[in-house]
Image (cartoon, rainbow, N blue to C red; front, side, top):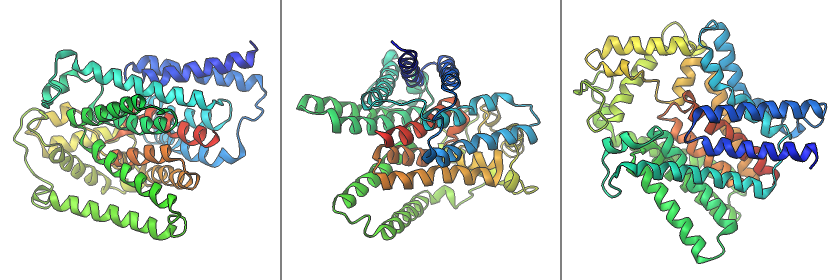
Length: 410
């Protein structure tokens, strides 16, 4: 076996380990990412940097990695080098676009599918592990589930429902018999019901909206209408999103438009059975927008350390009777607001562009798996700060680059 073949096999094994350990072991996952990075640096050095970047990938590589550099600038000028752990967590935002966009990692179609299947298997094992304490499968009990899951519910729901999209993608290729179809259907139903069981609300909503968009896209493309009336369909899509959002706000009007900002929760401790997640979020978002409106913070951002401090200070000022607001160290609970707080207007603009333009390219190329991933991530970002935790950062940066670069080359 040549050195090139050996390095290719090593890279493939490391990528398998990264996706397989993502739901379980943060430390092992980080070690695999570091080893893969070092392996590719050595490989690039040996090859004297030849073909390090595909010319066609330079723009998306820059776009995907820009958010990391915004956090790096924030670390230098706003945090004053005082919160280095955040940069360590955000490192995946830089490394995976370079790994998959550079051309150093080239996977066959079978290897590409093996990696996706490994992720599905690891999520299934993590979900099955939830029932080790005999949690009732047919009657949801939040506290029992909360004590049993090994990943926070929004991330677990995101993983599980993305696995449904992966199963459908793989099923189109390998579901040749009714047994294969039945197994795939059972897994899809299990992941969807499990997401309901753990009460991953926004992940379920995002999954429904994403699936609807994919079905609409597939239908219109099949009958060759989408590309003929592209602007009309895109306008209809965004109008539909706006109408859906307005209807949702109308349904929630009891607490969104009546005493929105200063509602007082009765719970003295955080209890997911008592405290509505929407009530919590509206209080968090009130503090977030109060902070953004002061001293032009909405333009420059505050850095990660100051954001955490000012949010806790606001909780202590307005919600002093709910001490668990500070004890739980709630972030902004919306990635768009969180990014806005931490790296300012340019940062949130980069995040939006990093979602929009690849989706636009994926629509043109018919990359349905990437579209489903990006839409699911976008909807979940509305109510969760997914890029504040390593399990969210690695999930996004890995699959965003992996599906965009690798799937377009197969």
